[in-house]
Length: 127
Image 1 (cartoon, helix red, strand yellow):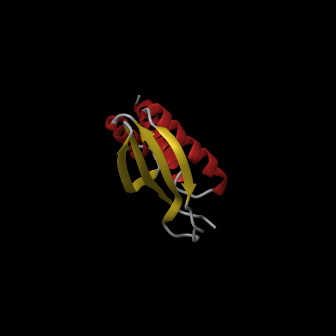
Image 2: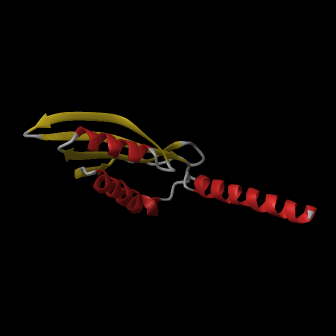
């Protein structure tokens, strides 16, 4: 009975370690993942009810073994409701990746809110 309890405890700890390892692995830069990252940014826009008008990739060369901006995207979008813009920002900041909004601008025009934000996702290049 003691061994069964220990095995159960070890399995529980293993799940935690595996989950943390998956999160940690996302913090390493892989240039082939940029299209998937842009796709995720686009999907979150659709889910939050905003329409992306432009995405610019401002990512610079990443230095090895240094915490740096893995992805630096400038996203322009519009929406009719301010709540949708807030929902989009919340969804972007709630990802498992270490992301932050470094810039946000909003202007009203013809019944729409035209917004621009800069999303920086931090991580490491392991070379």
